[in-house]
Image (cartoon, rainbow, N blue to C red; front, side, top):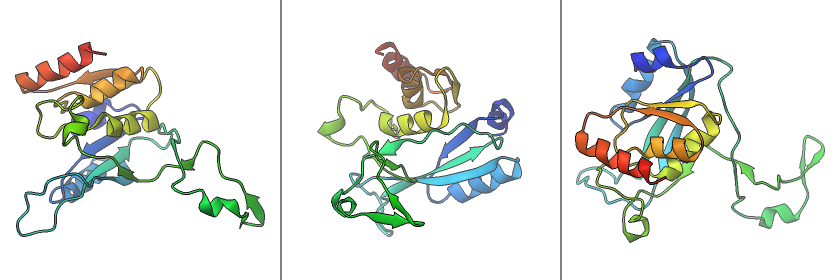
Length: 192
């Protein structure tokens, strides 16, 4: 994390996936090293199989967003409105008629993206225990980087963030210790 902060550009952001029992420690440490808190995103999924016997099933993974400088890169990503029923009548906000954006609503901090479980995702799924879906990587990269930016992935795993960066016209640098995962990531990148 220290090295990531050191090489982070003034307008850059840092994202850290976590699990319930350690995300608070990571968040505290990122404050201590002088990064600015952006948001705790929730990657919400419904299609997982819980291994917990004495606790509720996990239905989300927290994702921390911190940034280095106040002029961080951010692009609004629009999402479809869930329902157009309430849009049939005029909505008055601050004395003005509110008109829905034709491109959709401003996306929120809870991202409903399934895990890569089951036949539906067999084309994307590779042999990695914590592979991230391209859909979640695309959200991060499209929201918080510009075309041509460099995306640093210090724990590249199966290479999902690198694949997303390449597909979205960003440069990338990925690090991974496990040779099997390096081969998987390389094959995915070569396929683009």
